[in-house]
Amino acid sequence: MTKPVWIIDDDRSIRWVLEKSLLREGIDFKSFASADEALRGLSQETPQVVVSDIRMPGMSGLDFLQVLHQRYPQIPVIIMTAYSDLESAVTAFQGGAFEYLPKPFDINQAVALIRRALEQSRRKAEEVEAVTVVADILGQAPAMQEVFRAIGRLSQSHATVLINGESGSGKELVARALHRHSPRAAQPFIAINTAAIPKDLLESELFGHERGAFTGAAAMRRGRFEQAEGGTLFLDEIGDMPADLQTCLLRVLSDGHYYRVGGHQPIKANVRIITATHQNLDERVKQGLFREDLFHRLNVIRLRLPPLRERREDIPLLAKYFLQKSARELAVEPKQFSEATLRYLSVQDFPGNVRQLENLCHWLTVMTPSQVVEIADLPNEWRGSETETASVASGGGDWCSALAETAAQALQRGDERIMDTLTQQFERTLILQALQHTHGRRIEAAILLGIGRNTLTRKIQELGLEPDGDTPS
Image (tube, rainbow, N blue to C red):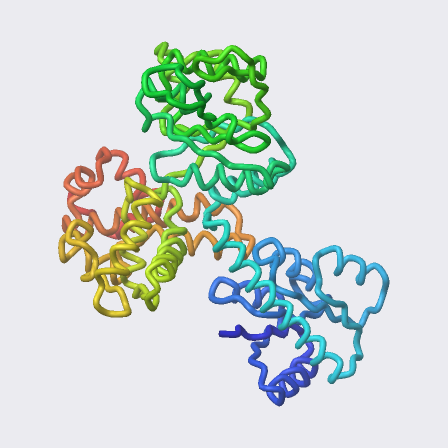
């Protein structure tokens, strides 16, 4: 569904002309008399294209362009102004404007320009969607954006990378993305879970073996290092690698050569090493369970992949994606989540992280009878008590989202001392609710809140909650 074109101009006549022309062309639109008003509107929806004046009371069009471009770089912005000077034009294009439209303008040319911008916006949206599906890594949360930025910064690097993250958080996906965006992208990516292979087979798995090297070695076998030649070798769960294999790996990283099991000819290794673990390697080094010299070899660049509970805002995005992915794999019509179900999933902890969410979506694709997935369709182990489920489904349990929205709006307005203001509102709400629950009895309220009575009394005074008469204590 195409989103509206936003018109931002303090000149009512300009807005009127553009509105009538877009209405005649069947193009949906929305008008704003100031950039500040449009900025507030961003918290509710996003436009397909923006047509904005430069000079307006309050925030300028260029300032709005900068804010919009930081959040939604794919949205084309057409800057229009009666002040046709070189500096404005250069600043507009440097800020990421799609086009510069000097006033007065021919309305037919303006509409044609808007159509071009709409076409580019749709094309970019399709490109972003295609890249997302290929990448298989999704995330709008700040912690994930940091991971994406790191992948971008490492795109021309051969550096060794250590990925820290809980089981199921997507460490191999990040490793594959690092490889795909590296100079070695055309060469093999080989992954091996060092914890899943028996200790006596791991050396042969990594380095290969010569014929007759041990019982059952009927032929020469190339190991993972040889298979990854010129490319990337991903060693998952490196923290569980046996001590003698740690020594072998250190030798390869130190002198760049290795030997097949039973072999006598050194083989030169041209492989980028990416490792991952769910364990705290610093602690394992202190405990003597992991070689310190190997740790320093691997810990050149460290990336921390956040667990899903630390980026709950990504859960709806991931859930929708995995539901579509499962439908494609099973060749069935994709199902959809109800808003209540998405809210419910967003407050779950997901100890198995992204992998657990993907497995859940696959189960729902197979087992849910209707096209819309409701909370009642979730497996029994996912459904809490009826009261808890109803609270979350109605949005009452997701107060953190409401707080995030309030903070976002305050930041957009440019408010100051946001932490103090919101903290006072938070404390005021808790104290008033506790006093109401205890009918004004402060000692009981303080016990329920987990603070001292004197602390409660002080906060009542600081927050201006002191009643005219004496409150029972």
